[in-house]
Every structure is written in C-alpha cells, then in structure tokens.
Image (cartoon, rainbow, N blue to C red):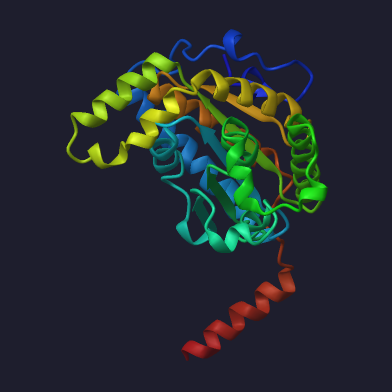
Length: 291
C-alpha cells in the first residue's frame, strides 16, 4: 500500500491525544537493506524536488523538529537529509536563549535563521520551546523582561496569546511562500530511559547526558500535557503537525523521509523554461569562445 502522510497528520480536524497516539507501529521496511534502499530512493526524489524549488526560487521550506531528549532528532536529521545539496540547506539548533536574544521578542532569534527562497531550512527545536519548556518552568519568564503591565494575571492567558502569535507567524510565512512542516517525535518514556542508559555505556555519547537532562525527566507528565495542548492549539490546515511514532528509530527516519518527500513534491514548482532562440544563441557563443 502506498505511503500517505495523512496517517500522521494533525491539522485541527481531530484532536491529538498523547496517551492514545502510538509511539510504535509496524515497520515500513523488511530489513536493513530494504530500509537503506528506500531511504536512498527518497533522498534522490527529495534532491530532485529541492532542485526544482531552488531553480525557481519562489518557495522556501522549513522543517521543525520537536521532541524530548533522546527521541532521535539528530540522527533523523543526519539520515533523512543525507542526499540534500548542502549549499541549499540551512540547519539551526536552538538552546536556551542568550542575553542578546532576551533583549528581543520571543520570536526574534528564529527569524534570523529562516531559509531563503529555494532552500530547505531545519530547526532542531524551535520557537515552540517558548510554550513547552517555559510552560513547564514558568519561572524562566522573568528573564524575558516583559513589562509587568502587559503580563496577563492568569498565566494560562499568556500561553493562549503565544499560541495565537505562533499561528499568526506561521500563517504569515505560509502566505509568503514558506510552508512549515512540524514534526513531533513521539517516544515512550521507558524507551527514552533505555536510550539515556545506552548513552552512559557509550564513551562517545556520555557527554550528551547532563544532570539537568535527568532532572527534566521528572517533569515528563507536564511536558506531555504541554505538547498535547500546543499541538492542538497550533495545528492548522496550512501548517499541520506530524506526530511520528519514534520508539523504532529506523521506522521513524523512513516515515519522516516519506512525509518530507511527499510534501516537497506537492509544491507547485518547476524548472524555468529557456526559449529555443536563447538556447541557439548560447550554443553559438560557447562555440565561438572555444575557437
């Protein structure tokens, strides 16, 4: 059966329920050879779609990755975009805001990393941290220096305002030719714990696990509530969320590659045509240059 991204899509027609959405589904590949064959074929199609987009320079394409630690963001980005021309690809990873960031509005630093027309951009975490991490840790809002008279008395009102700001931001980008694909890598808590333990057994990955990472696991339920509310509040027809079952990393990568290839190929792009007269003149000029 042909792949369809609709199985993973949330666009506000049906609500996302964290507890009812699977973190593991039957694999879309038979074995590792089949997996690599499929991923390579999708990479070639993605590269061709990107070539058309780059040649026309009308659309930009932003992919947002959101997930808990160890859900597979980095590995998926490396594998899925393996065949993408790096000169037409922009990747930005966002950590806690720095002093300069905090002197601006909460969306400011993300504007700086938007892809140009004709390019693919990837955000490893994003402005959604402003309604995820900050919602779980609202004390961090104090660092943003928002005027007290503009702060709602009810904190839930602030999150609703930010949901609205994000939707307006994304709709604005969509109307200007920058569709956004939002991927939430949905991983089970126990599976995440197994992956964190595996990091401790790998000398090349031990550095990736910090005491603060483990502290955040204590807020798992709060994060799941925040993700559920955020996805339901910001999923739209133009900029939907895709919830990726992520307990199987290989299946995760194949699902993501299929979704991105499908959406890139749906963009109404084409190679600009050159008229025959221009081609004849260019052929003639090249021959004259070589005489």
